[in-house]
Length: 418
Image: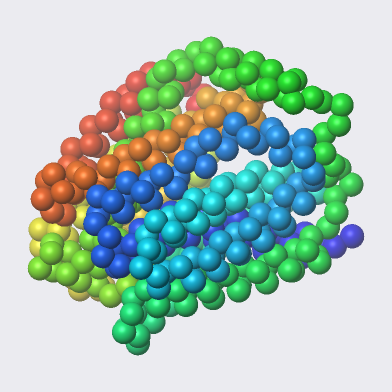
């Protein structure tokens, strides 16, 4: 039997890379290619949809084929999609064509998430799952550093050396496709065939739909359900608005209200400094809650999630693009986000407890994704309405009131032991 070290690192790099390609690289790429911010945020926001609705088709992954088959098949689909993006970018119809491919890649990535996580639980026993949970998390975050940092830096270097931005990003996606194709070939050979990894037998589609419907109904009968849903949708509202505009703000010229950083510098700021600070905030947040409980730390974490957004207000007003300063401030902002996000994820686990915990948690994460998707779709429109980054980031700060309101409602529902 092969050690899990043979496949867990590559499996979770494969889970993370397409997610960051679809939800992070597209924002910066389309912005650099001259797509308007309203169009960019609206259409890339729709790419979040597969992660919103994946609980609705995840039961059917159990009925057809094995988790291993779904995992390697989706990796092939994703690799081909990345190659298609590379070949379509230099065309005159690149925007609509690549959006369609990214849409397919997003569905492949969301399905890969379902299959890979299911495979992990089938291949490993409970003791091994606990032992390797840190490994899977580490390599998923490493995929974030590679996707948000390494690939963006590569694209930035190519942008400077080549006359065409589209060709620079085309080469970047071609390299990513080759890398992902190698992961597919590796898993085809080295991903073990778990004894328990078999399609569910003796269960009809009708019974699956009926069971899903019953679980759906029980979820909406949970105590404080509307308080919980409002928290899932609005706690991260400032981040949901920022996520589509921060990278354009960093690379747009100072005459357009941005900081005028190069694409390579943005890759360094977000993909290395930002990710490391985010991880540190999450680790310290976990330690804090483990010692004193969620209720003790809920308000401090909500404040740490929202107040660092002032970083972007300051940068937009001052226009100071000193790289050390920008790295320091975004490091603070990302640390605060990582610390504050801990409360959000722990509340989702707390709210999901009880019968059908796994399914209810999937619904919670769907609402979480919806809360990121919808505000992000309209971030570019709001940018146009307030006429620039400075007004937009002050609007983000105003949206923090919704985080505070839903935090106050949830705080009253938590038991003392949490």
